[in-house]
Length: 145
Image (tube, helix red, strand yellow):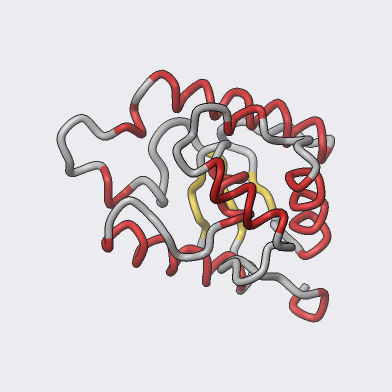
């Protein structure tokens, strides 16, 4: 199977430790993190994705807001530059151990965090990065690849 992700969620998955907007959101994200850890590929999409799904039934879900679309744009630029890959809807990405490590290293030094400005989770994500990404849910080892 393939996991549908919007561009800024490529950054969010780096620090996801099991916290979220609601219990349903967290259960869903835990399942996605497990699938990513097993090596399922990513299909980049525009707008709400598989992570957003539990939020879409609520009144005025934030995942449709213009500031979230801007986060996608900023993340696509940063991650695309880092990986020298087009980060745009329709592109498939294999998040192998090397790419995950490269993205986390860049995140930890602020190299791919333009999209994080104004995000309510930014401080938590920064602390997780400082802690060496301990206890993050998305893990890939060289042996899995």
